[in-house]
Amino acid sequence: MATSISSTPDKQKSKRNRLKKREIIFEWEGLDRAGRPASGRIIDLSASSARFRLRQMGFAPRKIHKRPLFTRLMEAISSPIKSKDVTQFCRQIASMASAGLPIAQALDIVAQDRSNPSLADMCTTLRTEVESGNTLANALDQFPRYFDSLFVNLVAAGEQSGTLDRVLRDLAQLLEKTQQMRAKVRGAMIYPVMVILVAVILVIVMMTFVIPKFQEMYSGYNAALPALTQVVINMSNFTREHFLWILGIPIILYVLFSFARRRSSRFHFFIDRITLKIPVLGSILVNSTIARFAHTLSTMFTAGVPIVEVLNTVASVTTNDVYRTAIEKMSQETADGDPLQESMLRKQIFPHMAVQMIGIGEQTGSLDDMASRIADFYSEEVDTAVNNLSNMVEPLLMIVIGGIVGVLLVAMYLPIFQMANIVE
Image (cartoon, rainbow, N blue to C red; front, side):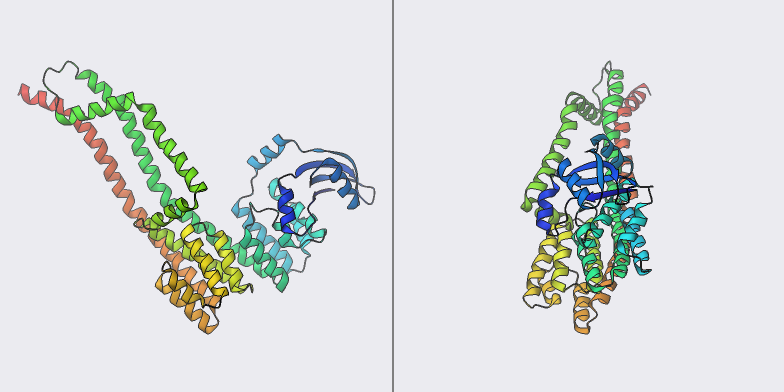
């Protein structure tokens, strides 16, 4: 028998957060209530505290020691919990809950699958927390890396309304759609960056290794070199002499940019606002943000979560500062009694069609259905925009790269052409 136990039975979230930073993973061996051998893992503040808690749970621990850091690191690297694992977790728990199985038993069944030890360990800890009297939402809240506030709030709503199985199925669909959306946006951004990076590397290689060979060949050339050839040779000399600076400055700028973006909320907001105005790419980011906003709104509203709480949760999981700030203000205005449509309209960052459909949903009492329609529409818009971007960027980048390489080659062969003309 194996188990994993957490030392945070207190349901108050603030207390758990204070203890989280000091918790240690221990491994233990001993006997259970029936006198059978038992072992497992326990999360606690000290070995003595872990031993005391094990006794409270009915175990008789004989050995207890810290779990080796190297073991934890290797398991995390070899079997990390990915988004698709969380989605599968939702579907499995939802299926068993709809079949009438208690949540603790469902978690235990999922924990038996050792194909992903990290996920199995997490499910074992969740099971123990539920058996100790915690709600599933409180147990999930101890793993913020995998379950954000949106996930926890939806599970809490499902537990309160008795519709946990349906909420988990909706969450699985929401996670899948979110993953697909992120993959498409990431693909749209990564492809041009990778092509440009390859082009830059190609130019640096030519400037560093190819052009100097031509320079040596022309060193005994009596006539003046063509202007284009001389410019390329000067650029090659500059690249070789200042190679470390050319390589280091972009890295330094990137580090400074990342530091400023993390530390300065104003700078973060400014960058997010500028990003939304980039041609084509900005449109993709706007549409994907609206799609995720609508997906989340529909899922939470269907689960019976009040609109103000829905907006607070949506704001907390929105990555773009422009929209996050707007949604936070919408939550305040809606709490004061303003219709959601009017609040969205005042922000002037939501598409007109989305605002109108939200208004229709409010008037007809079908806000969840209208939000779902908005999400589907803007998801399709993202698909179309990503495809158009790929079709447009690919030939354009090929032309640019071909042009750069062509200019460099022509510049290097111009003196040869001149000599051929002189000979003629």
